Amino acid sequence: MTETAERTFARSVAAGRTRRPKWALVALCLAFFVVQLDVTVVNVALQTIRHGLGGGLGGQQWVVASYTLVLAAGMLTAGALGDRFGARRMCVIGLVIFAVGSALCAFAPSMPLLIAARAVQGVGASALLPCSLALIVLQFNDPRERAHALGAWGGISSIGLAVGPVVGGALIAVASWRAIFLVNVPVCAVAIAMISLFVTESPKRRDRRMDYAGLVLGIVALASVTGGLIEAGQLGWGRPVPLALIAGGLVVGALFLLVEYRQPDPMLPLRIFASRPFSAATAAGGIFNFNLYGGLLCVSLFLQGPLGRSPFAAGMLILPLTIAVGIGAITSGRLTALLGPRTPMLIGYGLGATGAALLVFAGPRGPLPLIVAGSTILGFCSISMPAMTSVVMASAHESLTGLASGVLNTARQGSGALGTAVLGTLLTVAVGGGAVMRLRTPMLVIVAAYLVAIGSTLLCTKSRKLS
Image (cartoon, rainbow, N blue to C red; front, side):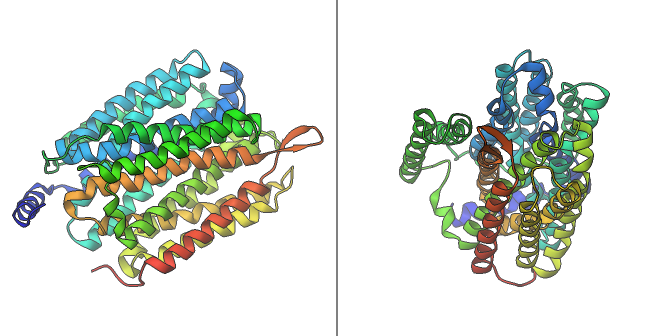
């Protein structure tokens, strides 16, 4: 943008800030809450869905991965659309699509149709998630107020992420697995009404053009790699199908980067990664979701598999993790405002690694107290989430907040899909001609990933207060 255009944009941003930022924050948090809830609400329902619709472990993984895959692949485009046509408009459109997808999930008669309906949910979620974050940034000008708002946003959304297994278990106990999707429809209606009333539309950039080639290549690359990883767990790592999917996905991924490098107005401007704090925080965000999504899936399946717990009992056993995630994310906003982002990021990653390390020592049958303790400590990894978000958003110009939000959330959700595929596959090991579930290998991977995140944070952030 030219200097004159930047000044014009800054004036339109200032004029568009809402006079009711608290209600706007509540509305946007509610929208993000329902999106995050559906990432994990199905975890405790997977066994029940399998009994009702058929399918194996691969089908269960696809019920989770189809949602997160489409969510990840569509967010960069949604961020650009939000910058061009208005973030609030995209939020409302996304909520409508999400509600329709939820209804389709509730009435799905087969596993393939359920997986397809979950993908429709992912389309809606991809439209509203990056735009909700961009709108929050635009509502709060003061860095401290913005840090508190991001803490609340991260806290509420993290509660949605972690409370999913609890809500899912309770709804299955009193109704059926279909209720976990139907409940989304009225929540979406409330969120649409509140956003329309309290959230001021963001300034529009009509010069943004759509990068359809990047969108298609990104979706194909993510779907191929994730699908290959899931199929490798079912067929074996040396079989032609998973190897072809993974290799093809990597080739398409390389082609995606080449296309984005040559595009005049790319979906993913590679120059945005020239900022070291932005790149480090985005990578850390990917590690965060890889570990949390994959870890939640493994713990949930382990509780219902080898330990034989019901969906409701499994949800209640994950409740301490739920509480830890909410407390950690809300605390992070205050810590970030006081100390800067480095300290809460290091604390969150350290606690995540500690919790996963405890779960490494869980045997084929538990013990149950160790699993609950380890997963609870693992939940405090959420202390890092709002802090890493503040680093990303502070590194981007206000005219690119939608894009920056889209990049961060694409990295997070794409890594979440990969975490579900990789860690879910590593959960099952061959023993004596059969297959059993063991937490040791996936938790070792989580520990190693958190150590990488700690090193990246030390190299690329500074210990200082926000100003």
